[in-house]
Length: 144
Image 1 (cartoon, rainbow, N blue to C red):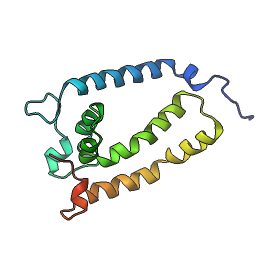
Image 2 (cartoon, helix red, strand yellow):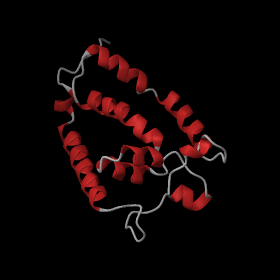
Image 3 (spheres, rainbow, N blue to C red):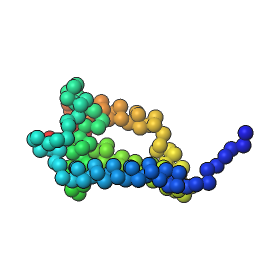
Image 4 (cartoon, one colour):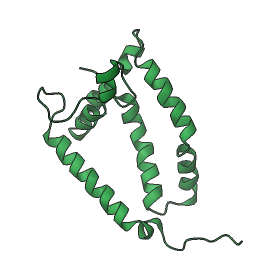
């Protein structure tokens, strides 16, 4: 069976997906701009994993980090979830590759960073490290 290629660029294949993703991102950004998750009585829920187990999951502090980034507070965002802040450029590249026709070299890069196995190892190591009670590991725990 001969291989087939899709002549349409990704933006033409997924226009509704791109529009919905952009709309959801904008709505989330507006919410996080206006609601401070660090304040008591915030309508944003706490991390369910931390609430149930008392341990920090890899995502703990994500909401607070994104709020800080929207307010251009890079230090505050890094204090809440450094892995999130450091991985955002890679996530942006993966999304760009999904929805736009990136040149060949960029497709190679996104193919490598799109492999789930290294990410799984990093997330597991990060989850363990941020719960260790010694410095420098305590720096990985979300700030208060």
